[in-house]
Length: 162
Image 1 (cartoon, rainbow, N blue to C red):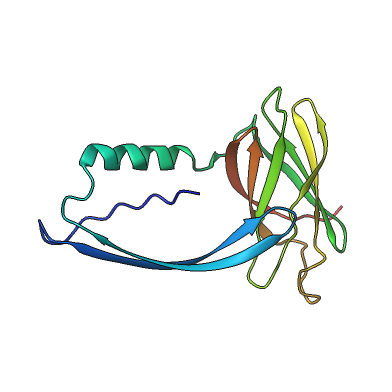
Image 2 (tube, rainbow, N blue to C red):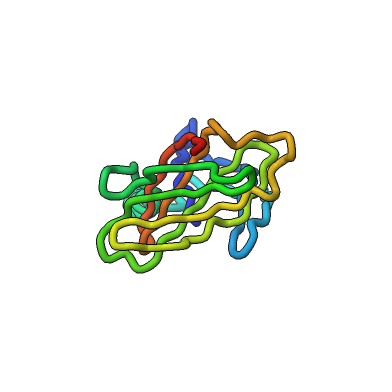
């Protein structure tokens, strides 16, 4: 994972101490939250502008794009109290499709599984077994990242009921 960050010192020819902390989810069969903190002393000439620009360009190119008519989530339906069905349109000839969901605070989600790829359409199931018992998934807004053969788009969707 790459997080593109550009830092410019306030004063020329002075070092900058960069400190950051965060929380990311590492996912395979289940998602495990990992908290981290980093610090780095960036010298006044530690990276050339060309190297910096190339690294930022590569990092930005790997970020999810905007969903569009040929590559997007088309429907998110709460079929059972604890199961979401997600339908999406994917590029032609996609071999592998994945779906990642950013849950609301307090929710923990197992990864969605692709149940069917049919041409340009894919259907996922997303179990909601580990959300709080008081949570209501209906009408909930969720940020979803759809990945098709390594290319990703991101969109905010609202869960509907049948």
